[in-house]
Length: 598
Image 1 (cartoon, rainbow, N blue to C red):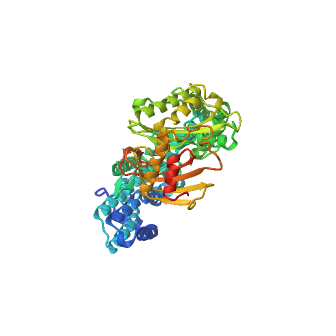
Image 2: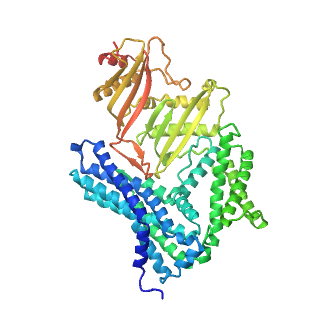
Image 3: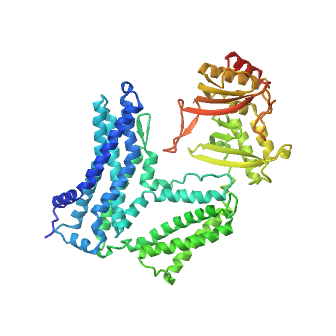
């Protein structure tokens, strides 16, 4: 007689818990060792007498943000495969469904068992680190509780994905594979599609973040959870994925209720899901294989795709991926039939149409230039070095956009020979909506075009020789406060030594001397063709200056959350090399004053 009075069966729980004791014991030992390694890392990173509660909290959060999602995913996958493995053979399915418990009781008992076995190892490492840090006189209740919540939420999220995958398949290998791919599939799909598409667009090294990776739980959590300033950022995302895990668990329950016993041994247990999974995997696989083959054999010999050759590779890759996928799902090699031929043609058709649409670029992705009112800041990296245009540089941003428009209007250039100078111009636009737009150009430039005021050469020469831009090329703008530096001098003159460390005050004074020479016209114009100041080779000084700067007005993008922040205390190192000719009298005089040269 079946029990219907309870959602939980103690006997079933005890049997599974005892049966899988090697699993959770081994992983608990590994987790404990990781906790011990965190303690040693804490001691070795900081001097013991200078350790603070914030140091301990940061280490708590590192475990929650880095190790937590990955460990929870791996454990959930292994434990779910072990507990729900009875769904993969007909005999075991019939046996388990004939025991005196309802499917509802069995589901929730297995759910509790899975959660307990997954969470034990994670909490073991957390407990060891907590006790270890407390034994050193450090204990942070806030860090401990936040990390505890994070580990529990990560487990709920990853377990929900794993149990849903267990209900969708009838083969153990397929169960594990589906769980692993579910946690990374959309992130991989975004990366593959982006890598494929940007080869059509000159100057575009990456498409704008389309957010598909947010549908890959472990990738999203590792990306969004970040310890910063002894706080764990991304807790909101953690809560969302915890709720998603619960929703997926509920979906898994209803699938389990309607799942037929004869679906055991099927790669996909529910027939309507077969085409969805087939076309998803085949599409991403086809694009990846096409992109890989094209780049591997370098068919076009250029940086952009030849659409005709690309379509040939699409057909070859699509044929292989579609029919191999169909063989795996249907468990037969008899897939070359008229019934499947129409699906195969439909997949190829939309892939080819999509590729042609990208090549025609109807949305003008390749030659996109932002409107000035939509830009808050720009980071420039070029042959002239790195510089930043902030909110106080509205006029310079407008000048730069004019250069970009001319470049976009001329289209892609190709160097006639290897002796032509290639000017690289990497632009990162910080938009008012918080997004980043990146364009990276490699532009062959010709000196004979300099007299044409409408040419790219003329526009680049004019922009990089504007006085405010030249100030920024030496990193002496008002938004940069000198913190510390070192200077390396190589020259044919007598000097104290090859390398000289500068104090903060000496660094500030050096920048003032450079600015004095710049304002006095002592520094020759910037040369966009040879990217160096022409000087007498027998009498020159080259300074390699590494500034550790406090960018009071610098906008930064958090690499985890994707948000743009304006920060007052962000330390950022800038490496800059420049030549000091005889005409830079103020700079040379100061170098003599501090004993760098004689």
